[in-house]
Every structure is written in C-alpha cells, then in structure tokens.
Image (cartoon, rainbow, N blue to C red; front, side, top):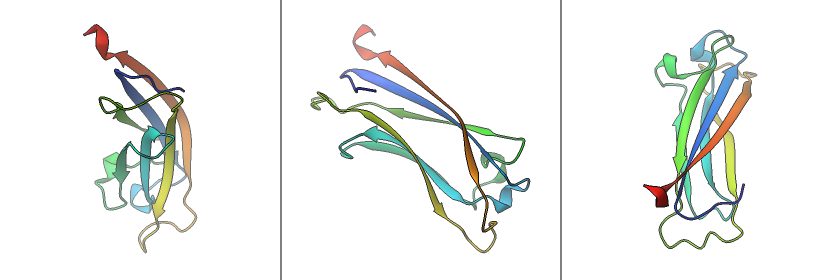
Length: 114
C-alpha cells in the first residue's frame, strides 16, 4: 500500500502458535514501516512476557500497531511494509514452535479532516 502524508495507519495482526503452553512460544517482533527502512514502529513480545500476551494453539492473539509518517517526510512512491520476525528460542521455548499468521487488517485515518 502506498503511504500518503497526513495519515495514521492502524495495523491489526492476529497470530496463533502450534504450542498449547504459552511458555513454549518463542520471542517475536511485529514491525510496520516504510519500504526505505527509515521509519518503523515495532512491538516485541518476548518469551518471558506474561503468558496472556503470547498466542497459543486454539487461543490466537491480536496485536495492534500504529504508524504515521513524520511531518515533512517525502512519501512519494513509498510503500507500507508489515513484518513478523522470529527473534529467539531460549532453553524454555520449544525448538520447533511455529507461529501462524491468521489475519492482517489495515485501516487508515486521514488526519487532515480532524
């Protein structure tokens, strides 16, 4: 999606894991930003995070990130990128744990109309 100035982008990402026990789910990072990698917002969910925040099998979780181009940013021909990074496995996480991307919902708000 092409990035437009004076817009706030809201990205809702739903993830599920193949693990029943949240303590076995590895750390991951969700990122939203432009394709030049100059501007990003991210959310890290670490395996030491309280377990209600981690997705498990049959109990997916939704995470919301917001992105707004900085004022004065040249947004011409820039596109929005969404990334899911698997960060690490620790001795407490399952070595073959898998994360499943269930859905991505993108919405925008025109800030010029407020």
